[in-house]
Image (cartoon, rainbow over all chains, first blue to last red; front, side):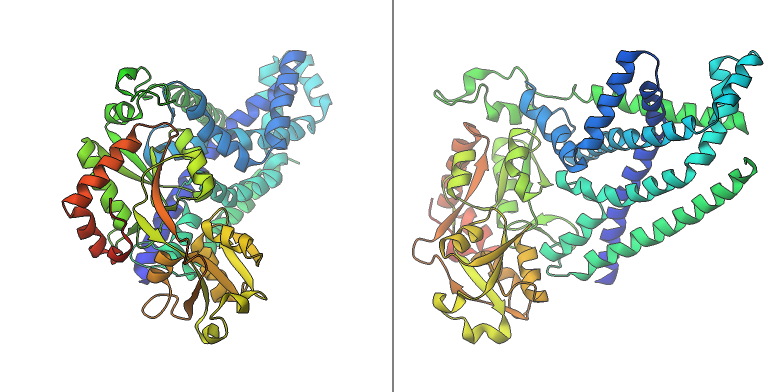
Amino acid sequence: MFLTVIGALNEGFLQTLRLFAVTLLGAIPLGLVISFGSMSRLTPLRWLARTVVWIIRGTPLMLQLIVIFYVPGMVLEGGSPWPGGESGRFLASAIAFIINYACYFSEIYRGGIQGVPAGQQEAGLVLGMTKSQIFFRVTLLQMIKRIVPPMANEIITLVKDTSIARIISLQEVIWAGYAFMKGSHGYSGLWWPLLFTGLYYLIFNGGLTLLFAWVEKKLDYFK
Amino acid sequence: MKKNRIAASALALSVCLSLAACSGGGETPAPASSAPAGTAPAGTPAAESDLAYVREKGVLVVGITEFEPMDYQDSDGNWIGFDADMARAFGESLGVDVEFQIIDWDNKIFELDGRTIDVVWNGMTLTDEVLSAMECSNAYCNNAQVVVVPAGMADQYQDVESLSGLTFAVESGSAGAQQAQEYSFTYNEVVDQATALLEVSSGTSDAAIIDSLMAGAMVGEGTSYDNLTSTVTLNAEEGEQYGVGFRKGSDLCPALNEFFASSYADGTMMQIAETYGVQATIIPQ
């Protein structure tokens, strides 16, 4: 029984990890794009970016998942645009999570970028550097150092937030644990698998914590 | 070092963009946007034939939850149960594959209308809400709502009067919740019937109201909840029935009713029912 449960939970946790990894890969760069938008000198672009951030941060992720997954099939002629089976639910979850986390990341980036003293940019301009040179060679690494602690916070939250995707029936690890209460792999009425899923999160987040501590140490040479 | 970081972030950005492109491309597999409307029976409000839509994509997506003895997994992870086997046979009669999709029961109408599933086939009690939101098949199975209490306290709760002081756990939106309202019991709504049982087992609620079919499979000796037992049947007289739900106006519904009739006539339906021990509850078609 233990091995069956572990097998099912492992499968669920793989799905959790997949969603986590894809969200990070997507949201880290997209957040940078959005943060540039929200600091842009073009007023319409700035307002667009800030409105998007307002809407995404101002509504529950759970609601965003429901809207992204169910509404297209209700309004589009040809039915749901999402691929059938689990892959469609994963794709919808990934997109919702990327957009949601990109908005949070963008604000962290903005704080990091604006926290770099303006004098450094002025110095760069005096030296004849272009704007992009200044960003990539002067600002970026200092920003990265500044944003590591708040990003670590968000990323650890993301690991646990992936469980929200169960609202559109993505079968991540919490779902897999819950299933044993209702009847899964020949067992029903078991409650311990659900509690056991906590260990998965705890161990994975423990690893992440060590990783971030290491990264912070590595970046220590920027004062 | 710095170049590598820039290259890495450029790579991540391109992954992000291709993902976005992928989401745009996701619209292409949308099937049957111009399905022949001529096959729809006259008078159905559906703009196009649901049957033709399902046939064209070649797969009937059946929305289920884990629910013994109707839809549940065997130890190899295959979907079995009375409803699962019947759904497979129905798909065969239509000439399409059957795909089982686990759904959140609260979202069943979203799932149907968003066309992420084609049918809800999961021991669904035909309540007024269900009948008004879905195109429902003929009833195929009798059910009732029973009260589940800890086995040691069963003697004290053998009639409806004795239940009034208890706090109940019921699945939100379920027939059990309706019963709790009708009897003006104190109750908490939980996400599903299995959680309602967990509440009783852990003592956070005094009793649960669940489907008698489910209680038969999940409560009592030889089950994981051998510390619980079912006592009073709340709606024994009027009873209730299970049906299958489709999108409003779907022509899959009459097709299923025909299938039920022929499968009852040739004995397959009862044969499947006996496999799962629900033969006594089957309604003649």
